[in-house]
Length: 491
Image 1 (cartoon, rainbow, N blue to C red):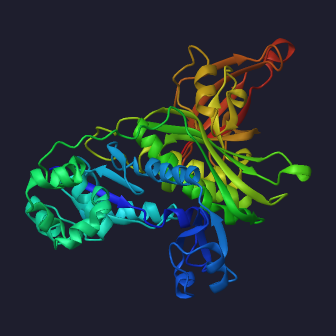
Image 2 (image 1 turned 180 degrees about the horizontal axis):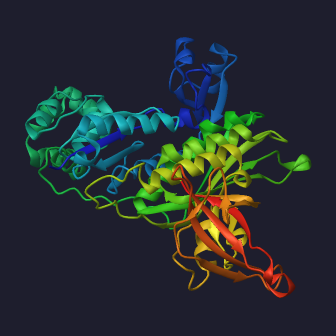
Image 3 (image 1 turned 30 degrees about the vertical axis):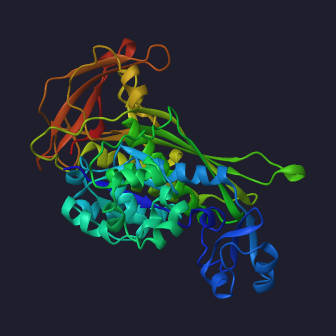
């Protein structure tokens, strides 16, 4: 099924300067000293599109005037397009700040056209923009429905009925000839289509007929898809000086949405992200504050990355106001394919456990969340090292001793061995201990603290299992009674 979604951003020039224009009621965007976009309350004061600067200030003296910046509008549109790449890689730009998404192959993945439209609308709102969505079997048809706010048409028959009554002024090639169309009584697309094609082409040119044919599926539509860049770096200039770190979360989420779309388009997962908090410039300039988040498991999920960033910002105390944000993804790797196992793993998947560890590290600090990693040492006290969450797995695998015996080890190793009493020539710990395994001899540490021990798995009368060892004596003490120690407890 071929289906297009058109996303029209009619308020883009205003929202570039006034991201919360509904709360900033007096925003006005000027182009060549004339009003081109304005907020609702400014319109209620009498200001109109096309009015000169002086007239607008006379009617709304408190209005905030902004000069139109096409380069900033292009950056904002590119940010929206980058975020929407998570829904389809086939995304193209169209006239009048409109994006076209070919979502026919994405419907099943996202649960149908209605669910997909809700997700796209939510992403656009999270970026701070308002948009009009429309669906149609053709890209130009969806574009016309979006510009007219005419809703969705999922079949060609429904699309043709909706296009019949749309005003002819929606088509850019027809606008220079609106007076002529009005004079001959043609006001809708359906009426124009019934005019003789040769005469219409001589009068208005071929571009008008091409657009009509595109909308009705009578011509092949060709678009140049938007391609994600090779690396990710997104910036956001804040509209006020922010002095509380948790207030930066909204802007950081806008950047994370763009990164999520970039990761999906590139089929990558991120291992480390950095967020730069830019401070004042000029005489009081200071270097940016760096927030770095290292992930134990590569991820591309926006909600997981946002949760980690929220925890880090909640712990941060700003030394200076923030005026801008910059998000980068310096370390990425190809996405891992989903698990092919038939049954779910007990206790959750490894990815879920890694996400829990990352959340704990973000909340408690990386220095407080450690994991054990084997070391090249046979002594039980020195066989493990506690390393940070990010580097433990790789370091442990590299330093594991070659030829280490595959013998049972207790889940709880005492910090210091506990000397045991002897009763009836047997070690005693609550009850006499019975040796339940053959001895495992460990001799190591000649370079620092030599050890010579015979380890046993011992069983008490309550059937609990203990890891005990008999200290081997040499020299003058070889005839002394052996000493027994408790070193660990089995689960």
